[in-house]
Length: 85
Image 1 (cartoon, helix red, strand yellow):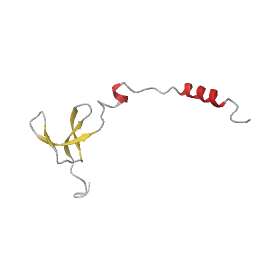
Image 2: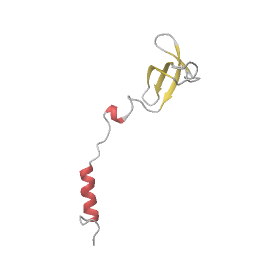
Image 3: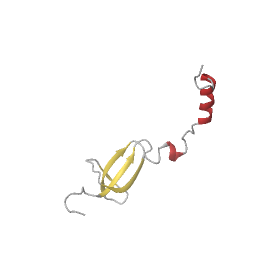
Image 4: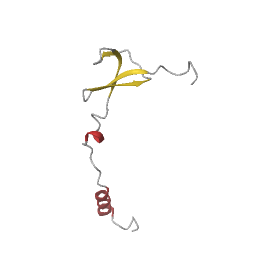
């Protein structure tokens, strides 16, 4: 890697405000907010809207779309002839 052109890469705490969940990872993001982590060190804190603890896909609350029902409803509403009247 070329020296001097890459952003600093270090430990950062990401906090999901909707789920009250935080995790420590490494990132190039930075923040003026800091938090004292469980290990006693202080790290930059980045608030996120959604994470794996609050996303419907990962929590199992995602709705499955019934595409067959939509097709049947469309055919009932507009007919099966494809608009050739």
